[in-house]
Image (cartoon, rainbow, N blue to C red; front, side, top):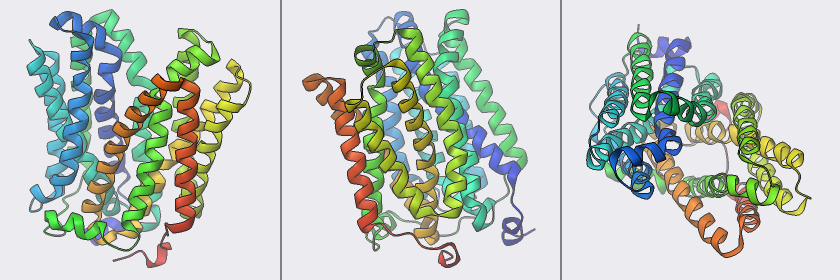
Length: 394
């Protein structure tokens, strides 16, 4: 069966295997946040040093996203994706048996390679697994793995860390990665490389009309979100006035709403990509300002945070679909740029939020986050265009 006939019939099994891969990758990425204290105590290091496990992963993922398409330009995409899942399993095992911080960081480097590479390949792969009109639905299924990991990784990691020890949690994560690898091995079709991507291609794609502006707008959206999300716990504790259980309940509401938002985003994008791209950051920006201006109560803030989660659930689906319709002939290179922009936005949002938090507190962080998101929505209205589905083919 050739690839055109494969694409005419959606390969939903392969799509689900991609969602499992995403779930395994994001779970592994989030685990240190809930296991930092026992990891540091066991290795005889400070929590700040143990926290570098997160920094190293993000830095390697950013670099990998820019280089991976060039480095693997002659390799069947099936084998490349399976390789990333093997790196996920290896990363978790290296961390689980790490005798020192150096070996632990080596394991997290492997995870960064898997994260950056898998995300860069994922959008272009989805374009080859399902017909063009079903790409938003396929993306929403794949991104549901992120939402599921957001809901499960931190609380389950913390629970099993206390019950079994942090090393056993990473061994369990390795088993999860092995499951994703097995399902991908059974379902992913062969996908020959479609071009000889070079580093120059990244620059050429970025210089295409409106692509650079779109990447900037996407970066602003993710910067605004991560400024909000990184400092949501101190906001809930100091402004809303809830305890640990209240924070956990509100974050659970965020995660569940985010999961629903993935599927809502797929439904909305199938009807109007441009409206979705404008409406979601506009809603998030309005929510950020509302959290600052409205009287803070646990019920009000829980509802607003859940609405934020619902809106953000549609964001990755919308921007990934924008990429497939804007740069369909160089989707891997464009995906690398988008992944790099998002990783840069994560770092920028957290750093900017930290500076504002130290100077003016959580309320000012949320005000700045809302302002950045409203600016992003305005930029999308003024300058980011989306191609209709019928004309999106290369």
